[in-house]
Image (cartoon, rainbow, N blue to C red; front, side, top):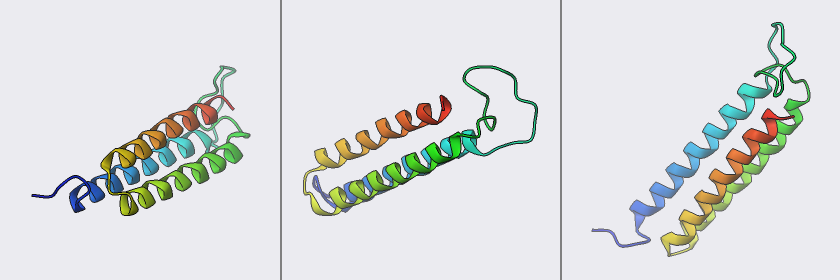
Length: 105
């Protein structure tokens, strides 16, 4: 049986971080990629209707990638699982914040 900080917790943190990163990117770019359809004058604009969303999506994609790097570093170097869980939690919060930042741009 693996203890706290064994290989199982390492791979769990790496997998959770990767899922959060890819899910955040899918959300950001689903909102940011322009589509050729008539956009209603609603706030927030529907997905694909804001031309100013692409730079914000790029910024938040870079932020979530950097936070995933932190998750990898913490999972590999820190023996306690608590810090890894906090790193993934911070990544989840940043992904949600980034989604709403892209949505309301």
